[in-house]
Image 1: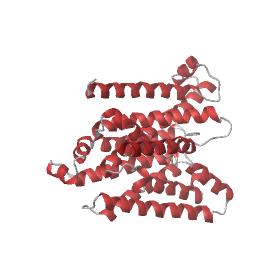
Image 2: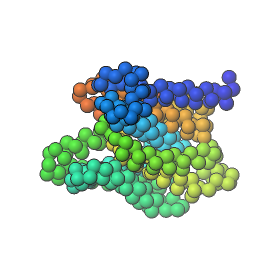
Image 3: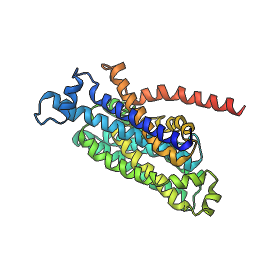
Length: 333
């Protein structure tokens, strides 16, 4: 089978799986609603209980599961290609930790209790500030190593400030709320969260999606890519800013969800012949599939215990990534 045909089949399979999981996310929940009634209630204007459940609870959760997963998968693929680091993921440049810090400050100060949307707004603002700091530290001529070091520094500072907020929190209930938010979840999200975050995620997707051909050239090395006409400043800005905008928005509404951006590109890279331009759309769909599936499992495994989404992705993702490392070591042995 030719590489192009296999790539189209992979994308088609991922797209069908994404649609299937999206429908399952809409129809699975503690309220026992028949499949046909669930779909009909999405378009109902009656305002009854079933319509409210579908339109105000399940639909926002499914949309955010799709978009947040796609964001994490796409940004992970871009950063691994740009930084040429197999361990690269959104947290490496400080975006996730800084967004978490912004949300924590909104909870710590009590602002989120007065104005609930202040939490995602603060998280998104903190992510943008973080990427500006990383860019300022790295400079226009900053190389890959400089960006990684700047990201680690910003991430460490944001993590320390988050710990300080937990340590000094005078209200134990606020501390518990901070801890639960940092574990990641899509529960109790509304369409207001969707309208706030999704436009930023789409803007980030556009910036990251423009990097396909440049990332293909970067597989030959930065110097070779420059000689082929790749503008490295533009690539740096698009990669870092696109990640900050999209992942910042995703973290703002879903909390910190790890391993999706790290594992998904590794899973799909062999299926697309290792070409970064082909890996980007595949990783976006793969990330959406993984997060939608994880969110469905959260509702099925422990419906009464509020199992957090970030906990489940870490439980599944960490062993899988260890298996990938072991397989790679055997391949190189």
